[in-house]
Length: 65
Image (cartoon, rainbow, N blue to C red; front, side, top):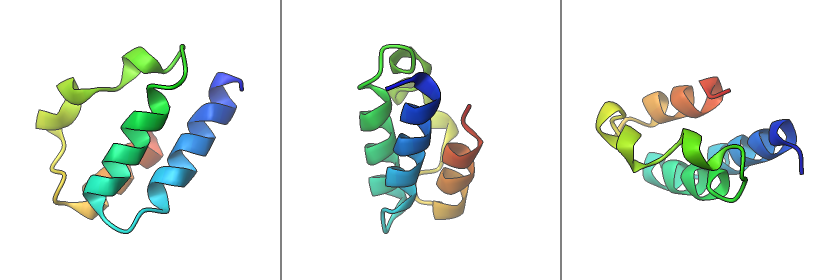
């Protein structure tokens, strides 16, 4: 799967989740499965995202390119 397709798929799956922690878990897991996207996301970003704030997590995932 191409980078753009994989990213779209990862975003869609993440945003289907019912809470922000599951959104983040889904997104980071799916991103780690693609060679070109693997290094662009990770637990190093966790301190910058309030995982209890669903709106902030959605905004981060939606805005990820």
